[in-house]
Image (cartoon, rainbow, N blue to C red):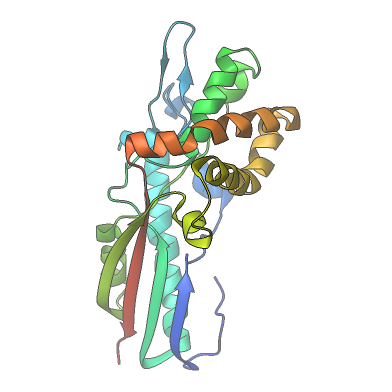
Length: 241
């Protein structure tokens, strides 16, 4: 990651969701290393039984290890780059997605996976398509973030806090008068805007309308039943002098 500003030129910085660096080599895992339940948030389909196992719930899984080391590497590089830009004593506040625990499966993409699973069972999507689809999701915990900050060494951690919000909180704050059905429609539209390019490329454009219609019908019920939230980290740092 290149620097954003000249060295020692900034007194303060505020960043939301520090960027993640994508490197194809990070995800090089041999097929024979992957167990049958190799999909994150995407349920495994069986002709008699439908069940779901996320790779993040199995800590020995090679992809889990790759994602964990990738977060550590990228966040370390991010801190080094920002440290070069800030003057001694300069402050930085970060906000980013996190998790209560690294194998926390309560991701909104789980709902997308469940609906894909339903469409496979109904013969609308080929099972092989689902079997060959991987959507890794990894969010660091407070402990993991703190460990990287201390190991990198450029900053003093002044404060590390968390806050939780429902999946539709941002919608309710923008318009308190919207009912549940309207909030579901907005949430489905937002998730579709993010995920459709990847999903349509793999499962086909023709499946997208039905997929996100199904998602819209159940997403908030799933959130309430599973007590799902967005878990966010707020990190206040001061560059060492």
